[in-house]
Image: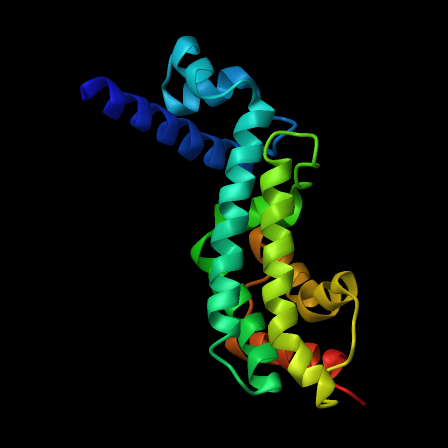
Length: 196
């Protein structure tokens, strides 16, 4: 029983340490030695749970993406009104990034794992399900000529691109967004996505 608990603790410590290191230094600048040092695990313990730094990043990225997408969908489906949903997601995005700055930094600044990389298949599947859920919410509003028919990539850019840029400024210490600015970001997203 103790060994199983220690194993879980070791994996959790590696993930928590990786979140701190990757968030502060970026994935490419983080070494395996610094990951082990941050988490306080031995070489053997590290390799018991993960095969490489990239494996840790893939698992961590997939976990963070699931966490973010779950919050996104839960907020979105609370709103039947299209404008309320669009604006609420911008506010949720900013709030989530403020509550989880280390995780948000990784989602904003790091390239997601590709399909052939550790975590890649999980990220691809998670995104597929996420986009299906968003499309299910979007489709009736599009049929009612309230929201524009927008490809997924453009939808993301128009909906959250300015909010992402505000988060970059926020995380760099250049600007602290105000509530009024967050409302304006939501309004801008609505104006970009509504039918003319």
